[in-house]
Amino acid sequence: MTWGEITEEGIAAAATLLGQPLRRDRMQWIECATRDAIRHFAWGVGDNNPLWLDRDYATASPWGGNLAPPCILYAVDSTIVAPKLPGVQWIYAGTDWTWFEPVRLGDCFRVEARLLRQESKTGRRFPRWVLQTGEVRYFNQHERLVATALGRCARTPRGDRLTDARGGERPKAHEPHKYTAGELDEIERQVLAEPRRGAEPRWYEDVAVGDTLPAVVKGPLSIVDILAWYAAQQGAQPYGGAHGDAVRYRQRHADYHLNPATGAKDAAGRGHLEAATGRDVGMGGAYDIGPQRISWAQHMLTNWIGDDGFLHRLNVTVRQPNMVGDTLWWRGKVTDKAVRQGIGWAELEIVASNQLGERSAFGTATVALPSRQLGPPSLPLVPAGDGGRG
Image (cartoon, rainbow, N blue to C red):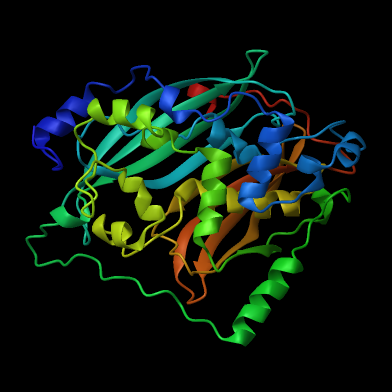
């Protein structure tokens, strides 16, 4: 097996784990949705919804207490399922979330994870890469299945190992966008004017196909924004921890990236924070984290749904990096609506694009809305099929 390269032998070794239960101790940052954990996650996303943060407001809501942002489950388990292929970097490619009930203050979780499938692919940027899809199931303290997540990771050659026989080149260094004062004023105006439905119900009967969702604006992205996400969602755990923990972890893993400045093993994940390392791993510079961007989509959706609705499904594909200095707009529109099993459902398309109009992520969502005729959505939903996939 060749370190850092995608080979038939390496793919076969990873395939032996298909369907097998996987250890998740390094993927877990929190176990329970405590008041502190909810607050820190909301701060890390930049979502000041009082349903998450205000005790009195939440007590008066239909839920009778604080909820957590649905994507807080990224902190319970990162959804990164990317085993084997030593030395081959992973790039987060998206999540297909399904929630069956809200995450409530005080909920505690155990998880089950397995590698669901593995696909060998070719493309313009990488002559050969592998897409690994894992399933994570989240059970609360009552042993109810609260959510499932299908996490997708692209396993690609690192920037220093790109050898495209067709003459491809390593990505060029990314130069941060330079904004005018007027552009920055407009971005700040949009951020501060962010609307939230809140306590006013968004009735199913009032929603029409073609309705657009108010955008959520994030940016210009800074290193501090990324650090806030790390503090909220994962810390250093997926990279082996810190100090002595990091040394012990790296001694067990020969596939750690080397810091060229020191010659020491160092996590390639620092490419999210260091432009030079971001270029070294083939991303062009420092860039955001995929689940961070997906959580911004959840922020937009829960703003629009309001306190009485419920986000049931969120399936996002992360297509290209969102670079430090970029500003991102998450937008959405209603594509369909229907009553199923006594609940009014709305289907949505969502897309993320930057200040240049470049699309970096896209997906779909399914939300349950209160109805004047049918009443509020009946929860928890009953998981359907294998693993709760509806």
